[in-house]
Length: 77
Image 1 (cartoon, rainbow, N blue to C red):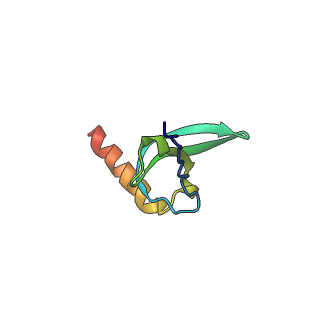
Image 2 (image 1 turned 180 degrees about the horizontal axis):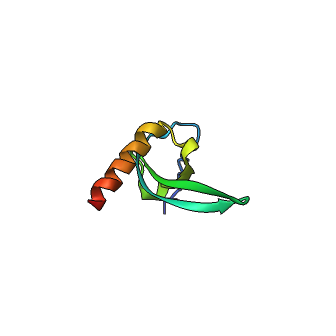
Image 3 (image 1 turned 90 degrees about the vertical axis):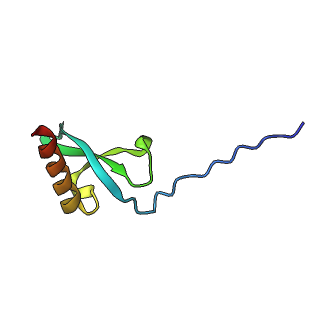
């Protein structure tokens, strides 16, 4: 009987991930400071790769956060 070998291809952490969109935000308390975190979805990656990031860690944050605020405002109207 042939032996089956499992091959695991690791996700390269050094590659630049492109933010597709911001899904939501939350405020958390760390070291007696309120921190605003954003749940981001990356281009070409599934929901299992979504992660919470502070604004300063989001690549191209001005454009991405502007789009998030516009989408959020549009959905409330």
